[in-house]
Image 1 (cartoon, rainbow, N blue to C red):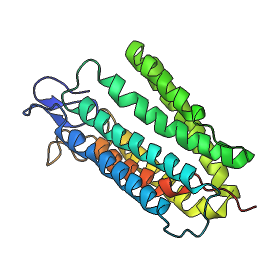
Image 2: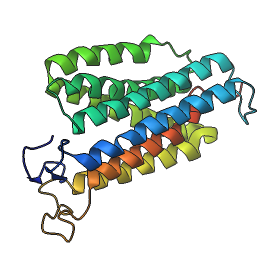
Image 3: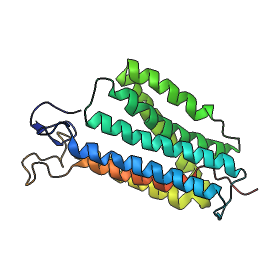
Length: 232
């Protein structure tokens, strides 16, 4: 969260001096908006007949799924800008639900593929709506829900990549990007080794901003795997 005045905040960003507490993290939050728009455009183009090496059984349903994912990713960016920029008291309500929703959608799609079941919208929409309530009432509960959703999404996606060669390359690439971004984001937080307020630029590395960019790219890479199913 931003701090008042100058100094280094918990995300190890040199805060203060601008109307926004964390300017670099604010601007890089827009990477999710760009990624989300790219996902939506690609899904609509594919729906219009772009050939695929592994066409899904229901192109319209797959297009809708990917469009929903793209919208959620773009909203993650909007929430990130609100959280790291003006940071009003209600920022968790716009930041947390789309993030949990994107994770829940990825997890639900992977589980549906692994179990051979039809993906139901409520599998991912219900947790998203529940997250709105959690974010409005308890930030700690909302954060915990995101952690659970992330663990399930990563585990299900890993299992899917092992059994489904068609999605393996994209899934592994996305997971590596997320791991690298998460590692950098953690190591550059205040009190961690790569956060150095005495460095030549005040802070050696703006890790949370790096996380934004790598996570946005990872979601863009992963998007074309959504809705794909094993050939029957």
